[in-house]
Image 1 (cartoon, rainbow, N blue to C red):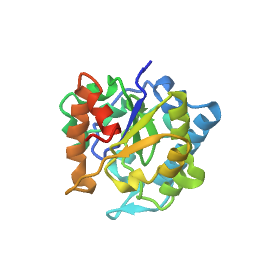
Image 2: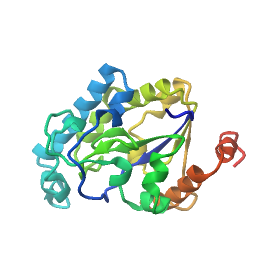
Image 3: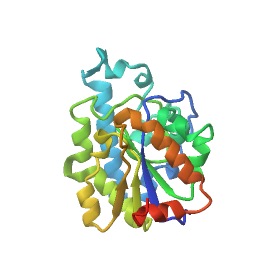
Image 4: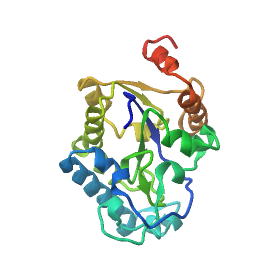
Length: 240
């Protein structure tokens, strides 16, 4: 069990590795860390978002979401509140391979999965997931469909999942490395603060949006590889 009381929140990646294994381990998922009612709610929202991808007529770059190559094999497995057994799974940190993850280094998956700190990922399809959570290959931006964002923000759904995780793991500080406002805004940060949790948000002085993913990946890699938490302590104290 992780002993750290620090949580890093990072973003998913549209660039992903293909393939995987048909075996699914429920214990790898965020649902294993949530009360049963919230775990069920998380799966319900994931299944709801999956429906918008597979059944609705929204397009990205004139291609139906369901017809995007990565979504053609996407099914309602236990990770998405269903019972299909044909899905192929990789851990999130093995699946994601975008600029943020590449900037972490060739050993990004190991650095993230073996970190002494807590790491959660924001995703348009999965909402909130663990670094080692088993996920399918998919393509889903949070604004691909007009109902995806509301699915996660209505009644502060995603925020409630985050708060439950923070409380269950006695988190004392949160570092937000999401870079993209569209994903950061899935969380109601005022509610997080009202519950007594302090969050620091990483911003660039000259770079914003996608361009910030690479420097943030490099920075997180340095922090996670550090032999101690002196840098985090200095940031929290306002010394950096």
